[in-house]
Length: 469
Length: 110
Image (tube, rainbow over all chains, first blue to last red; front, side, top):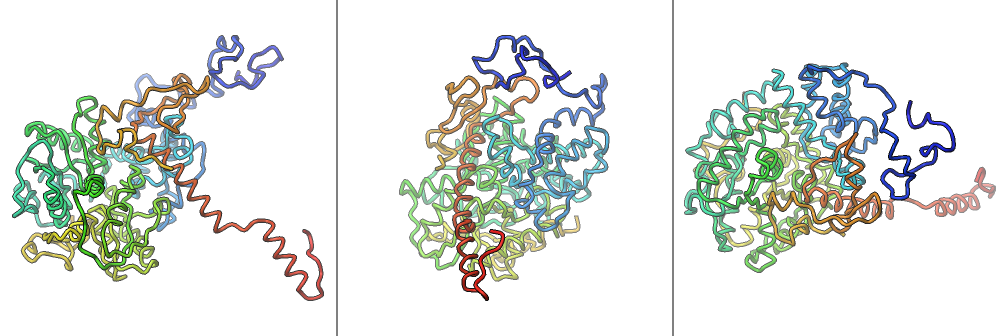
């Protein structure tokens, strides 16, 4: 029997009521909670791995499956370019429901979950987040669901070939193999800082992601020199490993946790209390993954460099004065704009740079923009990343700009490659600010146009996922 | 609108775990709702203890959603202000076409 089946006017539930209200009839408290249906699959005393998995993610998945708004579709970068129903955020939740009911297995669906950049557009645009998520403290969790399914696949022995190779090499070298067949290693992780005289360790360290440390070295060089100009004290990590975020995104969670533990231990060994982060992906790792791994023991302050630079400009400690005659638009990195709500500070910086003709596109419109460079997509499906990048570049091209400015090194390689065909230069916001401060940045921008000849032997122009991994 | 995500940290930039995991002291606004951050209303947690449990929500996440909602509604208002034609405009257009069209017949079915 359900509450709706009750009869009679004396029944307290015959009249509509709001649970928890102070003036509810006292008899309501005597009525036990009931549900309208029996368990479709009775709980097992000895649950299978699938049952354990779906028990954990059932509510999150039904939150999507039972509402079916589908506002997620048009903001999803993969859906925009593929129109594949199996690769929509809706399908990612429906699959978990189907696994819960025993209709599908992880082997059936694991490959579908490759097709997500974890940009977060779907879960933010979903009314269950945007209009009620903060009220109920229960929001759509597509990114977490995708990460969990990928991890369940790996735990079940279902691997994606490129991801397995990528993470094996990362594990072996402690850094992502962003230079393809050219090895990366601990010995070279600080090569980008050559000549900058940066100490090791200290209360504040600058963490440089693998892409910036080995491929687009102009970004960390710009950041370090701007910090030095502002008189901001910082050092580099004693032994920096990959943040572990990409491994977590691709489902290799044990590896991600090992890397995280190493980095935390290393920070503590050098007395570090604050970590400066120039890469939005690292910022996600340090403010979402690490807190989950370490809980109350996580006592490291994490500062995003873009926010710091905006503050230094506000305080007058940085004053861009060299005019830069470019017509630009700004690409909101997904992990800053959609996943963290950080969009003002980059615009503050750009508006402080003289000479720029800034054709801005608002942050809400950009919920549906993406470079395609996240979530491991360029490793496993470089063609799909290229299609998403081309889509983003076309939007910039329509504004008749010559430069697309980003604040994410991982977006700049695919966007840069797509930009060549439209004659749009892709520049990092830190590089641009440094230039306007009169700094000669140096380093390599990775691609042929900005490569430093001294680094040619380590630079590689091929897309991340096309390196014969 | 939009307070910055840093409004929960008194304007200090940076992420600090303990700070993010400590929401402001709640204030009761009705029997079934509370407020924490300015402009953030939340269901009384008592009502989320059984069938669907609440998720872990650091402060930045509540503020991100609240700010994004405001930004999205403003975006929608702008969109409709420039993209949607009112019914009266449509009727006027139909009537104008009818009166100037062949035979000057009135609108049908309106």
